[in-house]
Length: 381
Ligand SMILES: *[C@@H]1O[C@H](CO)[C@@H](O)[C@H](O)[C@H]1NC(C)=O
Ligand SMILES: *[C@@H]1O[C@H](CO)[C@@H](O)[C@H](O)[C@H]1NC(C)=O
Ligand SMILES: *[C@@H]1O[C@H](CO)[C@@H](O)[C@H](O)[C@H]1NC(C)=O
Ligand SMILES: *[C@@H]1O[C@H](CO)[C@@H](O)[C@H](O)[C@H]1NC(C)=O
Ligand SMILES: *[C@@H]1O[C@H](CO)[C@@H](O)[C@H](O)[C@H]1NC(C)=O
Image (cartoon, rainbow, N blue to C red; front, top):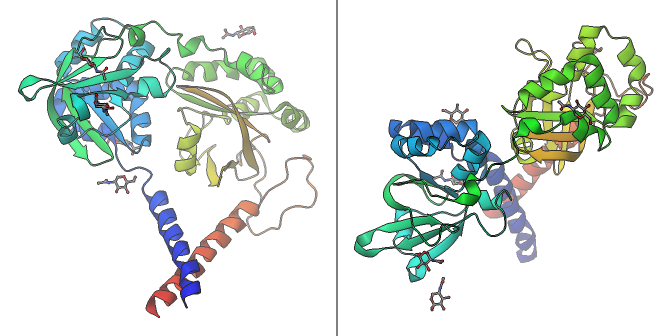
């Protein structure tokens, strides 16, 4: 009996860990937390438009230094571009947990803490740190590290605390930082077709330009865009089929390779499920399903399953992935019937259906059930 438990207890622990980590990926939502406090409505609005809200929700342990509407209007008066504004706001997001209690109990009374500005690599050199210092009379001061030792803001109050996931603390003023406010290249200056052409997706980029679909992709960059570009061999093997489409079908097929939203690899992995695309014009049209199996992320249409094989560019709000097959929408190509075994030969050559994922998924679940019943059995003994 002892040797058996030593094998099964770790399995049970592993199972619980898996259960735990899969069911808690969206533990907090900063937009919802701040929505209860109208005095932070401007700050909340800009967390959303700069895509920082999604970044904050994705992190397990975080502190947001919230600015009320008055503090925000003095920041907005500087008329920074949206991208510099994003850097300034990301300096107000600490990648560690500071509840109001911990604030007053900092070892030696002062600390430098990393922020999201630093953590995302946007900050040059060693900037992107915030100095938190306990001051006389129970006050706590905050200042950007690159601010000549000046602590611009003081702690006002705790807005929300979910230990040790997210803490939202109001501070009195914007943290000034020349580094964060510096002008940055705007994403719309990113040349999508050039990025793809230089990294193995020239054939797809050429189709975008020839069909005029590139304009729709470019218009979506600023608001957030995810592009899946099939590699040159995948496009070359597909050209016969492509040529048989009408002009508007060609555009729909190309738009089917974009999602009007920024989806990092981490977000794709945690948002498994149906995704609308740039081609979607009504509910349940031109969508596909994201599936994750370990480190492999696949896109399943009703016709084929493609695999993400690399990332060409990740500069929020734009992300461009490389995929190994052309995504064939069920609206333009004959869907494969669920019960039918994978076809032995397919006219499109490399466009064969891959049914393996569904099967391994089922086996995995069955394995966990067996493991669980074994563990329960041992516990009952
Ligand atoms: C904090 O996050 C963990 C992991 O994401 C989650 O399991 C837990 O429920 C969260 N705590 C609260 C109070 O929401
Ligand atoms: C967060 O909350 C807002 C407002 O309630 C909602 O629109 C948004 O979809 C939520 N985000 C997530 C990731 O659940
Ligand atoms: C606190 O101060 C002592 C003495 O100056 C130093 O040795 C220690 O590293 C400091 N601790 C932290 C966390 O900075
Ligand atoms: C934080 O700033 C204060 C005031 O300028 C300074 O005395 C302190 O040394 C700084 N703390 C750290 C850890 O750099
Ligand atoms: C992208 O770069 C190509 C040359 O590499 C150029 O022909 C095209 O006009 C550029 N597109 C945009 C939107 O600037």
